[in-house]
Length: 112
Length: 115
Image (cartoon, rainbow over all chains, first blue to last red; front, side, top):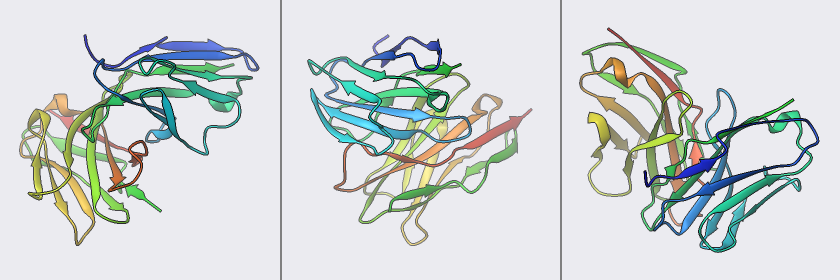
């Protein structure tokens, strides 16, 4: 399967703990995006990379959130000191020069 | 501010009948418009896009969408619905010349196709 891969698929964590998610984009795609989706809502943009450069961050991305794409390939999204409000599906997507993005299956985070 | 509206939370259609899922948008400049479908516990799958050219665009699984600039709409259509089309459908917009990252999604419309 050469689609976007996300790991883990599910994560349950206690409030206050740190979590890290990984995204492996489609290999020839230089653009990578993170979105967050809560129940009953459409995905909300978090951040965007072109190669290793983080070019845009949403106001939704608080100080507790950090994303990296160190070599322009895979990316990680870390949430520090998780809160119950962080419970959501975290979606990664990638694209080439074409405008459409292709999404992974997501990481479902539950903060208890 | 850019926005997308999907006025129907749910659309119910009988199998074999035509379906329409509505989307209107607000964006400065010429829009890039997209439809995605989401099956339970799955990521979003790209269906089709409008960038420029013919107002009727065709996509995956027999879906098509009609761009109407004067009505700022981009409705998703299919001539004959299948039970397997039942899923959550999202319309999205990206402003021309804007950030390559910032896709704005609607809240989604649940399509239910009954046999």
